[in-house]
Length: 136
Image (tube, rainbow, N blue to C red; front, side, top):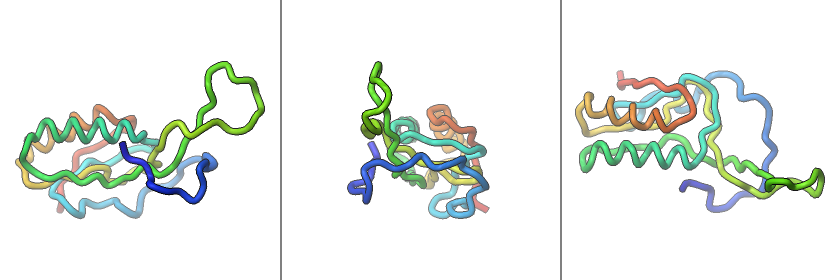
């Protein structure tokens, strides 16, 4: 699973609402086809890995896949039935904060029909609505 090798701080604050649209990473750069986020969300590193595996298995040996997001934000969680107080919980998972318009995955070296199906399988694993896009 994806996670940062090293972080300046072990636990980060949640931050506020994720606002606006993505200005960076909003266009297909590396491949021919892309999967674009259509809504705000927080994508877990497990979801990213599940989507990657689904795509890779479908396209078998053809093509190349780029992951255009990285889960660098730690989310903490306290154990079940733990009383209030006693500090913040331990880091439970890492997430990537996603804005609408962000390209999540890119693909190249395969037919459009296969790419569409692979991206659909990946999209089913993610917690945000997505759209298949082709490079202009």
